[in-house]
Image 1: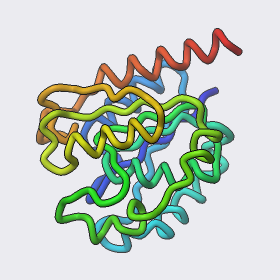
Image 2 (image 1 turned 30 degrees about the vertical axis):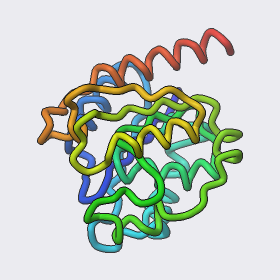
Image 3 (image 1 turned 120 degrees about the vertical axis):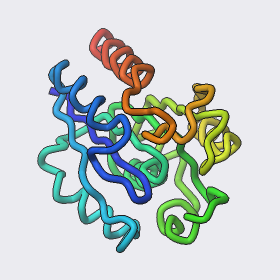
Length: 189
């Protein structure tokens, strides 16, 4: 069974945005899906998020599929420096300074030098989704992330921050990308 980890962003929670919809769809396909609640905005530090993730280690198994939204992306970059994953799907992601009011609260996650070689060794497949009108994370940040990961950015026009406010309670494009990658992995052994 393939395990999937979905990580929310600043002020986020497991039942927001497209997370419940994607969780349900993936479970219908036989995946084990985890959507933990990470401390935010209080105690929103990398170490406190890593402690929460440690509690799910047995349920996650080895080589899960990881999905990050917003701050969930630099969090998963930190995780992927140390832990392998089957595939990573990043939505409205960034590294470094995001250039918004949340930068001070995201510093421990994102404002550091990442070991891109190690991240690439631990995960062979990345997909980056970004919008052309994200009010929090500029398109350039998503483009920088895609370049560092050596992948093409999937631009979704008018998707805002891929949250409920932008109408994102479902995300069929992401579901299809996950299904396609898992089919490819299954075919290739």
